[in-house]
Structures are given as structure tokens and as C-alpha cells.
Length: 284
Image (cartoon, rainbow, N blue to C red; front, side, top):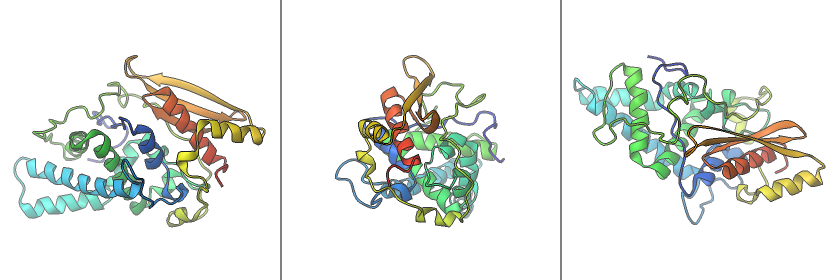
């Protein structure tokens, strides 16, 4: 079965949480071509996105292997190996990204590239998906990753396989039960112009000359003042009052230039401001 955003009972998309939610969100959803020194190791926390990608690649392989190991009736070892290879190295990852459009459109890219163009490349799609999985494992643990992957594969195979550890529970307790049932909220960044170069050249576009960690809210506002640009924000939330999901849009001269999402309004506002800062080319 091919999964789409309209597939009934599509598992909710897990979200980042915890003390490093802001750093994870900023690094995972920013293409490495926009990160100054992407291979530089941070002294604390998750280190860098390349470490998250490596962690996520192994975590995905383990979750898929575990699914087919528990599949009934039991599969021969060689068939398990074949099915795992088909999932982790084939177009299944692109299919899953297409099923969660908000996951695709949150990726910030250098102009003129668009998420649809770049993530159509299997190598780029795999890197992005593995990094996302690694970040989930880092902040939420293996049960969340396994539950989400088990849910996706159960729909694809048409047979529900339960994990004795996670029991395929809701991988995103912070999201409302209707988040992906009807029309999912649009957390995407504004569309980028059509690309004029191959996706493989995405990393060759200009990179940020300012470390992402230094792009504070006050710095964004100071830069906007120097450039005589007006800056405003529009915020909205979904979900229950005790655990809302905030979406904040950053408007520069009345034009939406960046969006941020988080369980905290302040964090979402900071993310939106940083993304707008990058989208305007102020980091060059």
C-alpha cells in the first residue's frame, strides 16, 4: 500500500520535546548548506546534525528489522533482510516524506531551491529523514521511533504488528487526535521559487556567515531596523489548552518570510525570526 497524507489512520507525526527542542528544531530543519561549519562538534548536547543522521540511520534499520522479525507468520531470515533493504534504501522514505507534507516544507533551503525539488533526490531525502529519526531518538527515546515506524509499516503491509516494548502507542502525546485526520495545520515556510539547477548542487548555494546560535531575536530585530524593514508576528495554536502546538509567522514588510512551530510560543517565535533572517539573505 502506498501511503499518502490522506491515508486513514496515518500515525501522528512525532515532535521534538525536551530541553534541547529549540536547538534540534533549528539544526534538523535547516539544510546543511546554510549551517556554518556543519561538521563542527558542539561541546554539549547532540554534537551536530551529522551525528544525529548516523544515529537515525541505525535506529531506522533496527526498527524496520524488528517489525519484520515480529511479523506473523514468521518470515525467513533472508526475506527479512530483503524487506529491510527495500525500506531503508528504496523510495519508501520519499513516500513517507510525501505523506507528511509539513515535515517536507519545514526544511529551510537556500534560494532558489524548494523542498519538493531537493527531497525528490533519494540521497537528500534519506539524509533528512535519518536526521529527523535521530533527533526523535535523542529527545524522546527508541519507543517513540519504533512506534511511529511500526505504524507506517503496518499500514503499508496491511497487517498490524505490535511491538512488545512500545505496543504501537501514540508516538506524539502532545498532538491532538485530529492533527492528521482532516486537514493538517500548515507549518510550512513560504514557497521558494522554482529551482534552476539540479538538486545535487543544493549545497553549493551560499552558506550562512553567521552561526545559527548567534541569530537571536534581538539580533534579528536590530538587523531589521538597520535595513529599515518592519517586522511583525502572527501566532496561533492548536490542540488542548494544557499542551498547545504553537505556530508563529514572521512578517517582514508585510510579507511572510519564516515560520516556527513549538509547544512554546516564545520558541516558535524565535524559530520564525531565524528562518526569516535566513530567507531574507541577511546572514550572508
